[in-house]
Length: 233
Image (tube, rainbow, N blue to C red; front, side, top):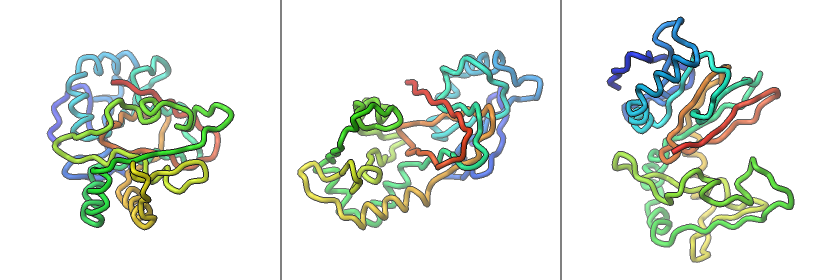
């Protein structure tokens, strides 16, 4: 990737991958140790907001590392305040890679999904659970008001078939009620895992994700852990 921003330097993190010529996540660090404070970061973000927006689209995931951030986290997507002693990685997968694999292995099923659409059903729990999408509007649960997304001419795998299909409280079928083959759903989950990217959280990490280009989740962890999450346009 061509890098032309003087306010950040490119770093590396364990677990990053080169996907279709782009590094995921792209690690951005202070240009020098003395420029790691919050005000300098906010100034750099404001100064380079167009460039950063283009970079997030280009690389799909951008990780800010090495900045001393203690407050005013409203502009971030994921912010690690307390890294867990073990686990709790946030794996993310370029969704176009899932589409490519599914088209290669199950072209007829993908065509049927595109033609018919999908239907999700779930049983709402009696108590509100803000950590779950159950009981929440789909725009809130999926972080977007656009049901289909195409970035850079790529076809995105923008659905939750794997997480909803055949579960105790939920199901996923074709929109006409016909079943999605279990082997297809299982293989899709395997592809998502095979293509996933993850890294160990460090205190102060800020991770930007393009929610239309990536599927993301969370690994189990040991306490304590505090990773704050926000969404923005």
